[in-house]
Image (tube, rainbow, N blue to C red; front, side, top):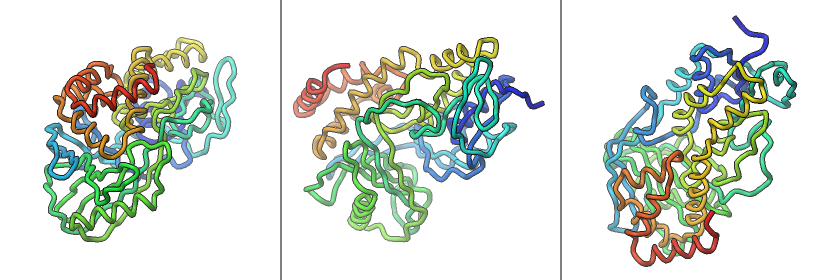
Length: 378
């Protein structure tokens, strides 16, 4: 039976919003999801390390190993399974039993007993509409940088090993490359390869046209020919200020849950949905319930970890191509359990950063020290 006042209204029907709505609904709460196109297929390519995904997350493909290419003749094989999410199956899984409402959220009106959006009343409203949130009050401060990527699916024989995802290929066809970019490639079959040219983080992001041009040059140098279909473009901020605590709660990219130094967020949102939903307490006043949910989204320990991840983002934004190659060479020389802690938004990066500094070669140490001193320690 539909309640006249929902326990939770989620704005946004992406992976983060649906995961939270599904988790809250499974706990017996009255939940609704509001989105202009709640059933629109997700077109983005979502990936994660397999061990970071909740059990039962549907995947299209997994690779037992991942490759990192640095300069010519330098590379690393990572023995950690990597996964491509099955968007259609995941969307269907997270939508089961949910009340999906069509509409674009334009205004939220808060009162003592509930909040109202588009005529829908709820005790708690969560904005999960992405890095440009619909109704959230956000700080007017620039991010550390931007991650930019141009990708497409290459149809044609490629010859790459089918059991290895190319996580980062920093090799370049131009010694005078001003901005470091890398190739990200996922073999989806003998004649199907997802390829993407990515600028990890840059204060002045390259244009999509320049990334596309770099990708074409790279594919030509690798001898990869075929038709490029289903182009994909992405541009989003890295290391922006967190939104202040307010009556409308944020989740996913809206909440700044994108890792400041890697750009990953979907796996984290899927993992956190259950814990955040458990914090939803209908016995509290709407204002107190919102405050409790904020504490679950950003507990104090995770806020402290993020400040250190932000320092890593600022370091990466300052590196040129050769420094970037040296940095990731040292980074992936660390044992997987060490560097994976740095990539985990919920873990403190102190130990991985100390291990990296201790094991890196002098040029990398100098760069890390110089970058850290120039920006100050948070």
